[in-house]
Each structure stands twice: as C-alpha cells, then as structure tokens.
Image 1 (spheres, rainbow, N blue to C red):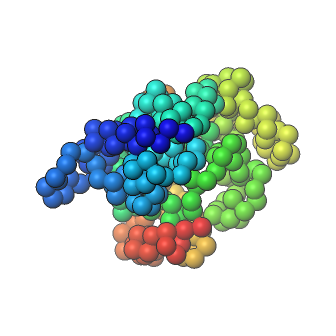
Image 2 (tube, helix red, strand yellow):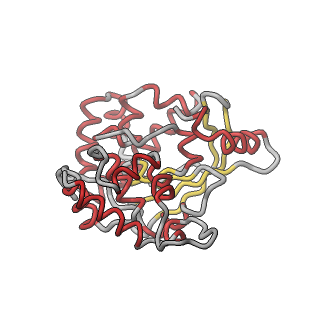
Length: 279
C-alpha cells in the first residue's frame, strides 16, 4: 500500500468534483474547489475521521468494499478504479467478474432522490448504489461479497432474505427473480457472471433448479408490493423502474401514496434513518 500516493490521488479526485456532480446542493460559498471531506465520507458510508486519515497518509489499508464505495463516490473511470485498488495494495478487480460501473444517467437521478427509498440494481440483482432511505429499509448491503452480492443468490440460499416479503407473495417473487436471471443469462452467455450464478444456484437450490426449467423469461418488477420492515411492519409501496437502454441496470424507486399509513412509516424511516432501523 502506497499511503502517500493514495492520499494524493484521493485529494485530486475530490477536488475535481463539484457538489452538483454527485447530486449534492452547492450550499454556502466554498473556500476550496471540489467536494468537502465530509461529503465524500457521507457518499461512501465511512466516518469523516477515517476518510481524513486516508487523505493524510495515516489511515489503515481500506478493504475492497471500501475502495469500491470510494470509486463510485468519486465517479472514477474503470482505469482510475483499477489504479485506486493497486495503490491501496489490492489486486485490481477482474473486469469480467467485477460489479459493473453504475450507469451515469441512473446515478444522476438517484442522487436527487433523498426522501424515498431508491436503489440501482445490476441485471444479476446486485445492489450497486443504495440511498440512505433504501439502506434503512433493506439493511446494509455493503459488506456482501462474491455470489452473496446478488439478491437472487441470497433468496435461494439464505431463508432470512425472504422475510422482507409477505409469505403469500414469496412464490411470485421467486419466479420473478428467476425470470430476470434468464434475461441476463441470455444476454451475457454461459461463460459470464450470469452463468456462474446459474450454475451455483442449480447446485445449491432444488427450488431454483425447478423454476429454471420453466424457462420463464422477463425483466419484470411488480408495480405495487408490500415490504415488511422488522421494526415498522408492512409497508404498501408503489415501485417504479427505470432501465438503462440495454436493460443491464435498473433504478428502483419506492413510494407510498400520500396520506397513507405507509407514507407515515416512510417519513419515520427518513427521520430515524439507520441509527435504529438499519439491520
């Protein structure tokens, strides 16, 4: 790990960004160009002290998950992301196996959504970016690695992941996830991350194997769904989806009808954030 070079790189990339580049208000007059340290820390989910130590060449070696969050927050290109990883003492991600870069157009929309849950998913069901409200609703997804980054994989291998849906809606959700994966597998091919996921699930889950044999193909999300929060209970939400042109990524925005119980619960979720309800 080259702490000095990492610190210089982070400072220069931070200085190259303006608040509007990442969906933040410009605010009061700034004494220095670029984002503030606390803004970068907020975008990545790390503490201001931790990020400050990185820029001062005295921080610990960041994990790969933290570097991925930094690359997204600083809007790095693939080449810049690889450089960040190597400077921090890690092997650069295999671009064929790494999480895809977030589509800039979707990210600009998500950056402006602060009062309702929103997240960007890959075509393999991997949460790529999750706003504060979505993290409060779905829990912290930043520590997931490998196949477990995919909500599809977790659905068929970790029973607890299903608890966010009512029991009578789980069969529909299972079919939808498999149908979505069929789309990705057809687009990416057998020798891809999609193919890896299919083979792993065929070995791990008899339920998945049975659903896979139905050959249902559809990139679909329910327009209206009920989600169950461990503290707030059920929330009836509308789900709007915006796809990239190639449908490889989707922005999900969850809203509640005005003057409903769900709207009140979302407001409470916004006020309390992850301090109490993250999980």
